[in-house]
Every structure is written in structure tokens, then in C-alpha cells.
Length: 516
Image (tube, rainbow, N blue to C red):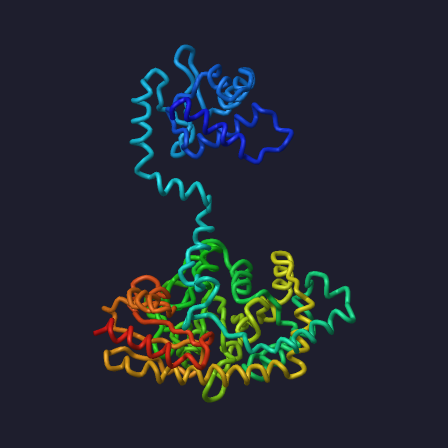
């Protein structure tokens, strides 16, 4: 950078940077030059102007420039030699460069630096800008499956999004106001004992009747949702490097939580009976098994009785813990509710979890975790020490919402709404059978699965749908390892009933055109 250009750039930065009022001039100049060096605006090998000329250009005393240069020199950002000048010796790739000679020409130095840094310039800038650890990168690695909104609007058929326009706002506001009219100081504190006791009792009663869960209220812990429940299980039951079985395809967010906690994931394929461990899988002994037996995510099948019995026996024999995620058990549209895996467990190996985000609203951030009796005290302590759970006022309002029968009524209403949308979508997508696509017939959940032959490019088909204003996810994004499953995950909970047929027909046309 030529001296005049550098001086003008420094002046601009000094005038626009938000420095503390009391910061001395030499410290301001030092900060601006240091930033220029660490961001490679001044690359390694660049010769800085003389202190005298820079003082004149910046209209400050030479002693001010000398003080700034001395600070840069002391910290290793520059090097100086009498008769040669002052040069940048720091580069972003090596830190403080050891191979830049003060006796070589400026042109030689610049060429050396460019050869060293240009090839990886983009990746280095990205790494420097985010500074994430491997664990951080793992935690942020599935944005593709969570970025669902365009201009703050959810696109039709986006999986995982729910319609809470029909939520009973007035009733909920009345229940919240009731808590504030007669405030209990305990409602303002963190939850010390696993959550608000009346809510834990209400959840226990509900699960005992509707899901055949075998429990007492003391086994119920209130969490902020599914991710926190899984995270707590991983933190308290596993060590870094332990093996965790996960369904393949499976829930990407659960995988992320387990990965961030240092577990080695072992994908287990699913078939029409659910999680289907092979002889090879059994040789990889897990510490944790994550499964969705009542409605496999994302394909939707129910784990058979025989497969459940086999899984429980294996967990007992190898002393593995089973996490049963019952993520949308409320939305079964035909037949009786499926009993929980936990209800079959005679050895205390299953931890059962659920969430209120689907039935109530996403921002409620409340879920529950049912732990075996021998883990109750440890999990209560771990939950408090690691998470400091709160929102006790909301927990109190939710307890009354359940106790007074509003929860059951709200679920019945949602089943009717979502069931009708499901039927309309199935009818609209029926023509895709003519091109070999297979539409799932599962009678529960809030999404449909369309399966393709393994040679199809489901990512491309999802992109074609997106170009038509429809957001669907490729099934292959839910897979790990060598799995070749292809298809689309199509959510219908958020799409208005009156538009389902229109949107479904448009999606059917996209699929038919792509597969032809």
C-alpha cells in the first residue's frame, strides 16, 4: 500500500473508529495499524512509512508515531532494522512470520507472502471470522434443515412447522393473569426440584393414561424441550467417545446434540418394523440408543412388539440407556394410541421424553423427561446445576391448562384440523404413483413421506419445488453413512386447509415432471 494511500486510510479509520474518549492518540494509531495487519489489509512483508512522514500526514507529533510503532514492535507485529525501515512480520497463516527477511527487497517479500497465503485465503478468512471449535462447528452443521423461513414467512409444506393460529390466546392469557394476580414468590425463582410440582403431576397422569408410561410424578422433570432433554441425558449418562446408536434415516437435531457431547454416532438402518439392528450393528456396543419407536422420524413406521422386546433385552444385557423420543404422539389419526416403549421396560433402562412445542406453541420452550427411579435425584441435581431451569409462571399456567381439560380439548381440535389437511394432501399427491413415487400410508404425525428409487436426485427435486414456492426436504439429508434412501419430507401442519389441494397439485406436477 503506497504511503499516501495508507495515510489517507489511517485517517479515515481514526476518524470513524469508536475509540474511548480518554484513549491516547498513540494507542489509537497502534490499534488501527494492528487491525490492518491482522486482517491482512497490511500483509506480511509490507513496508510501513517512516515515522516522520506518517506524523506529518496524520498531523501528530513524531513521538506519538514512535510510541505506536514501539508497541507494534514489542508485540511482534512489525520488525525494524536501521537503514531498511519497518516491515510487517505477522501473517494470518503462520502468526508471526519467521521466514520474511529484512534484507530482501519489498517485491521479493510480497511475492513470498502471496504464494503462501493466496491459496487458502477464503478458508482462512472464514476460520478467522467465526473462530468456532470443532464442537461449535458440529453444533452449527445442520442449518440446512432448520432454515425454513423466507422474509419471515414459512413456505408451504415446510416440515417441522406448526399452525398455532388457532391457539386459544384468550384462555391462555387468562390463565397467565391468574398466576400474576396472586403471585407466589416461588414462581419467580429457578426450578430447584425438577419443575413445578402440579405440572409434573399433571404430566404423569396424562402419560399414564394416554401413553401407558409406567411412572410416578417424581420421575418427571420439566426441561426446555427435546434438545435439552437429550443434552441432559448425554451429559449425565455418557463420556466423551462413547458410542450412540441412532436411527438411519433419523432426526438430525438429535444427532447434533449427541455429536456436540462427544459421542461417536453409529447409524442403524430402519425397516417397516422400525430400528433394525444387524449382526454387524450388535458388535458395536452402545452406551446410548436414541429411537422414535411410536412414530419413526422421519419415515413414520411403528416399531413392532418383537423389535421393542429385542431392543430392551439388548439394552439390559449391554447396560445401554435407551432414549425414547415420543415427539408427536398426540397426532395419531386412526386407531388407538401406540403404547410407549418405556411402559414395557422392566429394568429401568429407558428415558422417555416429549415436548409441548407441537401442541401448544414453539416459543413455550417446555418439555418433559421421565427418568428411571434410580436416576431421579441425580437428574434433578444435574438439571439444576447445568441448566438453572425457569419459566415457572408458565409452568403453573400450563398445569392448570391440563388440569382443567383444555389441553385434551385443544389436542382434539388439532387432530381434526391436521387430519383433514393430511387427507387433502394425500389426495392431491395421488397422481405421483404414475411415475413410480411411493406415498407413505402412515396414519400419524405432521408430515408425509414420498419415497423415490435410489437413483433419483431428491435434492434436485426439492430445489425444483422451492423454485415454485414450496419448501420440502430431501430424505437423503436425514441419512448417514452408506444409506441410499431418496424421497421428500412434506409437512402439512402449517399450510392452510383451503390451500392444501392447490399446493399439493403443484408439488405433484413438480415430482411427475422430475421423474419422467
